Structure formats: structure tokens, C-alpha cells
Image (spheres, rainbow, N blue to C red):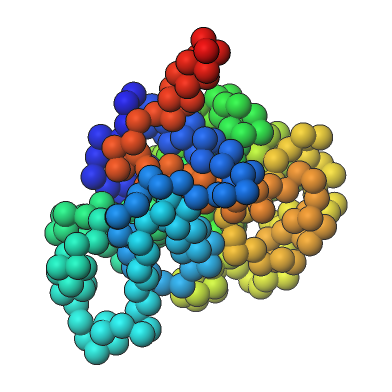
Length: 323
Ligand code: CP
């Protein structure tokens, strides 16, 4: 596989296994750069990246912005609350404005599913989906995949549990697609109201008993209870949710001795996970954030037609050896 032969990165569904592995291998190269005193490279010099966020974000937005800066791109950001969207400007007119400014990459988060797909059909720039409605969050799934591979080399044969509010989670949908493509067994767990039966179409198992599932898992991927997306009461109370589905200190003792604990953030401490588990040596929540920058650098690089970096590194090493 030479590079990503595509203009946009919109979802996991359209990525091949080879493309996912290429992104992960390239991310490793960029992560190694973080240990240098100068952490930037001139890969996107002269290119412009615009972050276009119609929904709040901390990690994804900062991570894309840092990735763009570390690749030496010019960066502009668009905040809905301070833009002409509040005066009624439509998405298509915002798109035409960005097109006129000759932006090269648009990183978009939007509450409407498929909004980045619409954008990609109407603009020459590369569009990267930073989360659309309940639909997809492909770069989160790629950084989650990379983070597991860093610890276990491969996902093949691993049993990964995704616990919590699956129904409202774009992360869950993209994670399931990525983990299944790479050969993992995936089990979903949460209250029946938050884990709809139709998720079985993804080829996953579903259980409502966290206590039975935990001892089986190699990776526990917890999701946030998304109070802002819920209409009506989908479980009796947060206290009851914690009692049945939180990764508490007591439940953590039931897990495998080398289990990995993940969370895409933001974390509701004391609701889906106890403080002590967040802080435990099994938790890779902060490493996921670091890896997010490397994975997003790799995506920018590969969408720009960059050659595989591991081969370049090997060639350079061979050349250096022969001198
Ligand atoms: N994981 C994630 O998407 O976090 P943000 O909403 O803070 O970007």
C-alpha cells in the first residue's frame, strides 16, 4: 500500500484494513518525533487547515490543531458561536467562503450525521470527519486502534468490551467497525435502553451483565453517558447506572491482570468509571490523547499523498548502514 488514495477521510467503513494499518504505522513515525526537542516537520508547509466545529470539543479540536501546527501548516479555526452562522449563514455558503479562501483541509464536527460527506461533495479541499451526529468518529477509532496495537501489537483475537451509552455514540459505531475489521471480538454492554438490539447487525455480541463480561475482556473501552443527547429517562438514575455499569474499583479486581482500560473522553468520573481506575497503571486514557495527535498527523500526511514512512525509514537505515 503506497498511500491513502482518497481525497477525504469520512468514516471507517470505507477504509480497507491495509489503509488502517498504514495510518497506524505512519502514526508511529510521527509519535517518535514527539521525543525530539523540535517536534515539528515541514510536511504541510504552504498548506492551510481549517477546523470547522459546529459542536463543542476539547481533545479532537486541540489534537487536530496541534497536528496541523507540528506539520507546519497554516491553521485557521471557525467557531460557530462567533461566526456568521449565528446570523443565519447556511452550511453551503460557509463552504463556498472556505473554497474561495483556497483552504486545503477542512476538519469538520457537526451534529448532523453525514454533514462532512455533504461538505466533501461540494469542495475541492480534503475533508476529515471529526464526528458527525451519532454516525461516525473515524479518527477516534483510528487512535483507539493505534493505542491498542501499541500495547498488544495486533487486535486479532482480542476480546474488546465497549461499555455504556452505545446508542448515542459515534465513537462506538466507528470503534466497532475498526476493531472488527482487524479481527477483534467485540461485546457491547450497558442498559438495554442504551444498547439497541440492532447493533447485532455489526457482528457484535451484546450482554447486559457487566460482572459476567469483565473477566473475559482484554480491553475495556468505556463510553461517556451523553446527557445532552438523551431525551427522556433511559435509566433510573446516575446512581443506579453507576451501581450496575460503572467500572468501579471492586469490579476492576475481577478483570484480567493485564487488562487495558480506555475511554475516549471526556470522562464522567464517578459515573462510568471510578477515579482510582482512571489513575491506575492499566488506564491508557492520557496515552490515547497523545496518540491522537500522532494519528491525526499521519492522516494529514497520507491524504497529502505522503509515501509510507516505515519504508522510508528502513531505506534510510539501509543506506546509512552501507556508508
Ligand atoms: N473524544 C472526543 O471526541 O473528545 P472531544 O469531544 O473533547 O473532542
